[in-house]
Image (cartoon, rainbow, N blue to C red; front, side, top):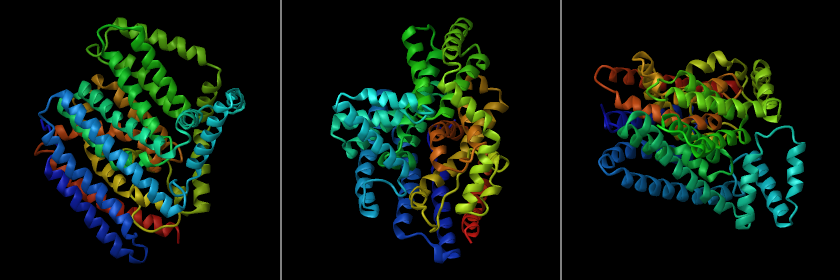
Length: 467
């Protein structure tokens, strides 16, 4: 069983990235990326794979306490530096400290400023009335959280992003605890290091979007629920924390909360008796049923029902709209196309296409996910093949249900929506790496070829679809 990420895999992944970068730049030289996007990609890919190998070896034998201290400190420093850099990078590139095409970011910022002003003027009831009249709750959590920060910090954007860096760093610690509890110490450490170094989890710290907070709450909800299910004794405190964290997800993204709730019920009914005993199972089910019945017929329930009823038409309508506005081939990207590749997609944007600066900035992290998904797929196959899945139902069902929802939506190839699944993919990737041997190493070399072909084909698809 491997306890580190071998150089055999990391060096080949780095080499493949450079080969693809050169081939794409030569094949489509008139659309070659600007040098700074290439630099973003090189730093992302080389940084992730080089240090994943180096740190998984160097940090492998220290105490758990020292590991968590190093993990949190390093993760925070990396994220804080990137957040400050991107603040000035965006200011230089766009004239404001927000990302390219910052519609959502500016919307969240403006609403948060309004919330902060209302609190300062003792008029917070105006915001509560506004929420009461709004049609849904799935986007209410982040502006409210950001508004409180603005009220305390004097509407400081940079401090808000430093807070994201703190949350992102602690998310890595939670990943370590969750993965180690499920798969052992070495897998826990690799998972945490992968999340610490994952480029897009770092870059989003410098954006004014809700993803970092959502990822933190999601990982915390799954980690505390996993702790609750595996505990020898139940306590009101542990049950309450797990339920509050799962419930909070509905205020950031409705389908995320639904996926988490479905995963909890699945874990209660399908987990091995070695994971959760019968008495705990019955007690938690009863508490969950009481909570769910309380919200039945409410706005959260109505939102979930609305998403479910529109699942068959939402994807088609959105893809047709994308075809009109950009890529003529978008209508072919249905669930039947997304589903088989859902753990691996999206593929990186490595050419200059209109209004896709953010995609180019993130392309290195997307490539990293493409490569790491091989190990995650291997892990899921092995867990099912050797009947070990019953010990990890919560993780498996949450990941597959959330990705299944994405496959049925128009966001199946949206990097931003896939980001929520990345920490969990890293857990399974770490487990897959731990199971690598001479027999299955050949499949990784096949994967290298598949990724080369897929990314070249995706590049053609992007350009040809835009004429």
